[in-house]
Image (cartoon, rainbow, N blue to C red; front, top):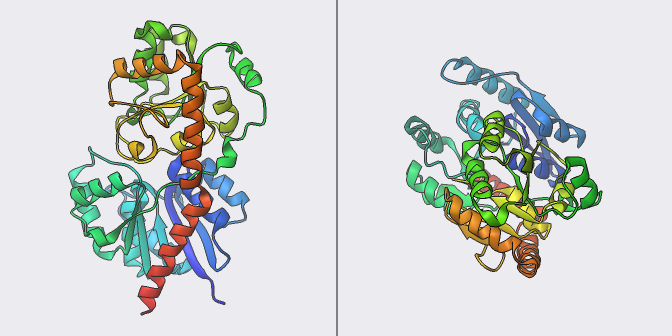
Length: 372
């Protein structure tokens, strides 16, 4: 049987939710699909992990944009050589320039993804998305709220945008060392109340409001915070923690892959995002039975039921965030109940098998339509 060739296209595969989606896909696609990953710029850490699965990873070393429009032609030539049946793009650069190259290369089926609500999306980016939709077979949105916002922002036809909820490999939530060992490695006492956040260090993720909550809520004066992730705000956030007087209580550990160990060391997981799609670290934390406090933005309320599987607060509200954390740290019974119900809620809904089945069903439906 002739296999269907799929090229997954992104600028680079750093540590993040969209990149995890590609890793899950190449690990679990049925054998009738022949997957290849193309990194427009470089591989990144997830690209290296993808390569270890045996999936080919091609690195083009390009940086397309208004200053390098000819790079679109180079991507087009790559696609002409590899002749995929399907190109599936992830994140902004590939969404814009990768899809344009795929259209120019006459790839039979082109699929984009939208994983966030971009309230600040530049007007020319929205216009480009609208123009690219004419040559795009489908856009996959990570949540219902993301789909609805995208339809309004881009003025897309509803038939062009499907929702497939992101998923996580819950095996990542299994610890390999004890929480006490993890805490000791970070200089945190075994009995210290500890919260944690796993997110890129960017404005979107709202770390500064979490820091303000820790600094200004008396009930949280003993709470330690584990900050997992990297990004351009690493140094500014470290300075902010010092300025707020909580520098000794905030532990920056950088990007990490041993998330099960880190989650096991957290009493509470926090997601203080200002805007979002459907954050996979939140889903993973819930699958690890962590009680969560998260902001009421985008796809988060589609995952967290306030008061039953976690606590929701308004975005950018440090006082509300501090109050919710104080409530959780003040009640071991509440933490246990929310953590238990969180796991029961997410494991059936956001598992990798369900995600891959949904993506494969879309591929096959589009292939059938194309054949007809």
